[in-house]
Image (tube, rainbow, N blue to C red; front, side):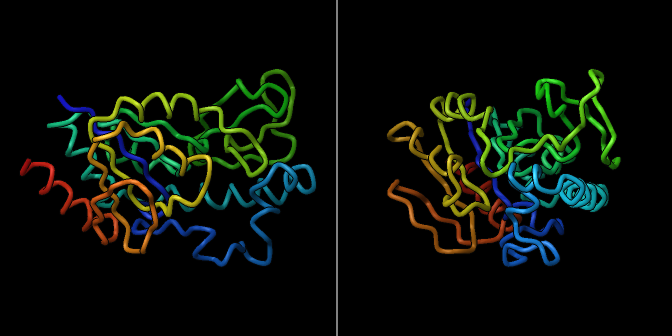
Length: 226
């Protein structure tokens, strides 16, 4: 069974009602993205950051996967599908996909500010100032913020290097380090890119200029006809 590696970004979840910072012009209400999604923002105003992620978690509870997510699950019948996602939502999990690596963390989990290896799944519950881990330290969202390293990146590189087919869905390939993963796709490996926008890349790519759900339908037909 061929190994199909998929890199997904915000565009795949947009159809499910999850708005991106780009949609909002880089703002959340009157706050700049760096105030609610950076390590500096956390040090400056942790309560604001917690409130932001509490609101996102509340929204996520009622979001459902679209065919962009479901189509990837369907491909598991014929391919060994490995998903690397830049998204912090759980829509790939809701769709039933099995092999998912979250590059930027997960919205439904929290970690200890002092012991980041202590991660807890809280589902859609709120976390607030004073909520502590088992060792007595404040909890924070299990999210990789601007200004922080991406711990899952080496594992992602390892997966990409073994791809027989590589697919990019709903990401501009402008956000590093995730955008650099395309550099590790083996030479000669077919690359498909699903996105309605014009995206520049030096690699030879089959472009499917569609939103995620309709693009996945086209990709499934293409892959099954080979």
